[in-house]
Structure formats: C-alpha cells, structure tokens
Length: 446
Ligand code: F3S
Image 1: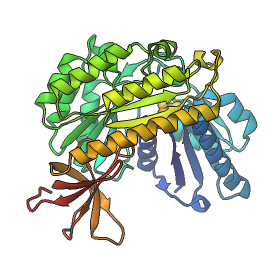
Image 2: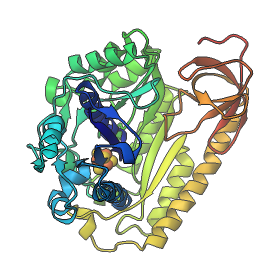
Image 3: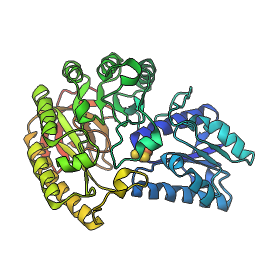
Image 4: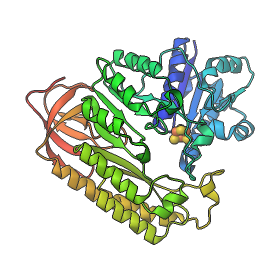
C-alpha cells in the first residue's frame, strides 16, 4: 500500500481536477496522508495564473523535493497549470521530479506513478483540446456540504492579460448527462450546495448543443433530491441571456447570486484588455439583473494597474464602483504574464501604484459592503451552517449571497446543536464590514 500526500493549489476548477485524481488514487489502493514524513508519493497540482501563484507552486514542489532528498519520499509528481506551462524548466531544474503531467493528461496518473516507482520518469502532455477521462468517483475534500461542479474546460475569450487559454485549451463543455450523474453522486454523498464553475459558465453548451444551455443544465440539476442550493460562478457579463435570468427567477434552488467578472470600467482599458463590453453596457447588464431579480447579490472582480491605466482611468473605475455598489468585490493587481499581449504593452504601471489603487478600491468597497450589511439588519435569511466557532456557543454560516472561501460569513450565537450543512432560518441582528451577525429563529429546518 502506498501513502500519497496531495497538494492542490490554484482555483476551484483545479480543485475539481485534484478531487478526480484523489478519487482515482484511493480507488486503486492509495491512502491519503497529510504527513510529509509518512508519504511514499507526493502530487503537487499547480497553478500558473499570476506571479504569486507560480511562486507558491514552485515553493511547494521544492519543499516536496527536499523530502525526496532526505529519503522519505520516493516519488514526486507535478500536475496542473504550472506543469503545462513550464514543463521543460521543471524537468531540467528540479531533477527530483519523477512525473510531469499536463492539464489534459492527469488521467495517466496511476500509470505514471507505477512507472516512477520502477525508477523511470513519466512525462505526458496530451493535446490541449483533450478531455481527461476518469471512471472512479471523485473524492470530496470541501467538507462535504458544498462541492464544485466543473461544467466546462478551457476558454476562447483571449483577454490580453490572461494565460489560461494556453494552459487549458479551447472551451469544451462537459456533456450534460455526465454532469447530472456526477451531481447525483455528490448529492448521495450528502452535498447540499452545488457550485457551477468553468473559466466561463454562461456559454455552457454552445460547442456541444449549438446554443447556450446553462439554463437547461440548471433546470435538470434542480430536480436532484438532496441538492438545496445551486450557485453559478464566473459569468461573462456580455453572455448573460434571458433564459438564464428566467430560470433563476423560477427555480427556488438557484441562489439569487451571480459572479460577474468585469475587470475594469474605463472603455479604453476594457478595449486594451480585450474585453467585449463597454462601461455603458456593463451598467445596463447590472441594472437589468437587479430589475429582474431584486434580491440578487452581485459579485465582481477587478484588475488594477493594467498597462496604460492613468489616474483618470482609475478615478473612472472608482466612480463606477461607487455608483454600481456591487455586493461583493475582489481586486487584483495586474501581473504581467509571459506570452500574453499585455505583458509587452507600453506604459506598464509601477507596483506601488497598482497596490495603492487596489487599496483605494478595497477601502471604497468596505464602506459599500458595510452599508449593504446594515440594510439587511432586521431581515430573515436562510443560512447554511459551515461549522462551530471553537470554544464558543456560536456557529458560522453563509447566506445565499455568500460563496464559500471568497465572500463573507454570518455568525450565529446559539445553544442549539447544529451541524455543517444544516439550513437554518436566521434573523440578522448586526453587520460588520464584510460579515453579518444573526440569531437563530425558533423554527428552523435542518
Ligand atoms: Fe491557476 Fe490554472 Fe486555475 S492557472 S487559476 S489553476 S486554471
């Protein structure tokens, strides 16, 4: 029996791949360990999105390489986006690595590890448009009550700052029957919230069915017993379509929540970024969504310090955020990535300026978020319990407006015993900058 230590880095799409690999390993007799000194094999599933993510991936590989040098670890495998992007460098610079698999080759993992235990390196980079096929059931690592469902791979948008199309290939939807089977399995395992992810979820089905089909997929997923909430992340604003809004209004299980990455609001910067919307169009999309679904919670992300971003562009973005009042906001500083058009654009912005602009945007958002939280005081809301606060009679949970790991929480003081995944009716009594405070109602549904 072999012990495997698995490190999953990067985004929730990559986590879905990690869980597929873990399922495969466990189905074939591997035991998972978190103890580096007891592992026979380590797999590092990497990210290469921005500079910091690459550093983190390399640091993790080097840490595992040390255990190999010390003799406890026998095999070291590297998978995921960094493996796809820097295969030659990894092979050449880190000789302790035995297995390198590209993003479309992780289904070779078992074979690769067997070969590596025989003392032979295994490197595989299948065509970037392939789809890995793993028959075993994926392993749930999120805690069990929510899980990511990766509905498509790749991206065709080619924003000028983004390396992902080179790492993940063209957009390929996962067939609907396969997703429904996977969701049914997750529901049988106790998952209550499905979170639909892809580089872009809104165009799901265009390649397979000739038309946008996310609304059909959502309708089918709503029929699965045990699934209580369905949340959609990563919707390109220009791709939002009427049937999607309609199904969100009709189906009670679909959270009134959308993650709508806009990246900027200055038309000049949006154009340089290769985005397909203007500021006026973005305003219209947000307003249409709020008219159609008044209690919708909108999340967005921004990139600050993109090449050529002037102080005026930044102020335009600040004014836009002030006016739009997104409920949730993430701000990244621009990171120039090799082989992307933006990296060689003139007028790159100094790091301190990027960071100052990021801080200003976050400060503004903090006020917006605090005001919005205060407006919710006195309301009742359904909450999914995440877990207990250590040493206190209090629990932490999320409302329909909070995606795990990126949004806020609600804290509930109660003597009632609750479990993670319980759904409770909660009365909102207070607001912090990003979080809420609430009281459990007498009647609650577990
Ligand atoms: Fe990173 Fe690859 Fe995801 S680059 S963000 S792990 S798609």
